[in-house]
Length: 543
Image 1 (spheres, rainbow, N blue to C red):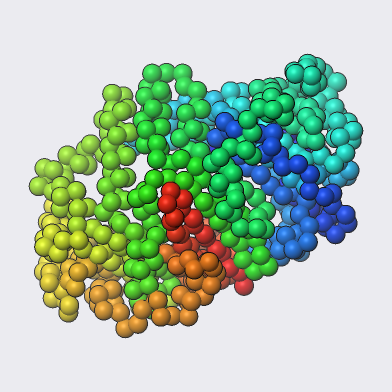
Image 2 (image 1 turned 180 degrees about the vertical axis):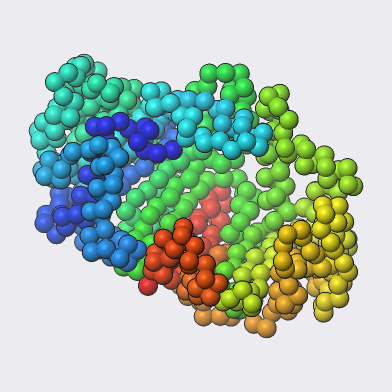
């Protein structure tokens, strides 16, 4: 959902300047105001979505933000273009000189409820593409933008100018506010300038008068306390609560949303932080969910990634592929069955088709799948290696799956023939219609492999060297820090070499992003769990 669908003209104008003010003028070195109260102190504890941003960073945070922005964009003043783009979209004419005298260090944006329809969820369950954001009704969306203020008199004068002469005036719990022609409510509440829906503003006033605040809410306090220092922005999200806040206008919409809330019942709270450094950008996450819900990025994922071929430039590990896929399947089936009255679900059709061929997804595939890894190696089309490697929990079942895959391919118009590959107990060569290369499905040494060409399968089963012993792995570990093990590694230099060798950079769309890809060095990610809290980290390093 775009922010512009939630916040109308005056609020977007202010946000456009606030988000870019510090780096446009170097305000950190010219005497930024000291840190004021945390906007979360006046955000209601019930808010399911809250975003906070340091809009006037100082010291190392300011330097690091500017450094990574310049490296990414190759521009001396990267935020000037960003400011112009945001102001153009919002038709904003607010200048930094109007904001600088009163703007504090931080802003917060919260949403308490979304207005609109859940019919996009119904469409998704039936297989039709739909844009949930397009179903959100701005007029029914409640929330507000809360800005730290260093000079309340100047901030009030600015809000008065933004509201205009035709604004309606009102008061709530002793706080005067205005409602502009676009139904934005504007007011000074304590040390904050607030712009948002009327109910959003009233929620801020109530919280400032002693109501329960997000800052004091146990989940928010717990997760935010685990974050690393030096964050430029933070996001707090309660997914199930956010979906629960959506207002619906039909029975079908209500059914779809009930199903979605049920599916999200274990996804309790998430806190994410954006942390820049001089040569990297990191996203740290902390989430609360029951043990066993983390299916990717854990200890097993890290172990399987470490065993992938040493020359992999893309490597990904998954804790338990069978369990993850089974949960996703259950999710889709539940959602589809809830909204099936409106039309047939492709999911039901797919499962029915497999059943007619004597295939049961859980019985014949998902049940024996354990931790898994995906790797890509080679810097050109002629030496490209790619394979999915799945640890088998039941070697007899995974060996039988080779034949079942062959029958599925043949029934779909492709060809499959037995193959003999070293180290395998069963293997089949697969040719798909319209695909010029040969795939292999093979089982052996406790692994099930689907690979591009025989060489990929050989490397998957018996790599000449493992990623865990490589310099790239040690660099990824160092980037994650705190003893966290990587479950994703992507080397952009080799990716760019591959695209150059394949002459894919000549593609018009790809050509536009190639200069930015050349600025990137590596991407790595990992996670770890302690009780109900899972911590994750994604790090993008730059040249």
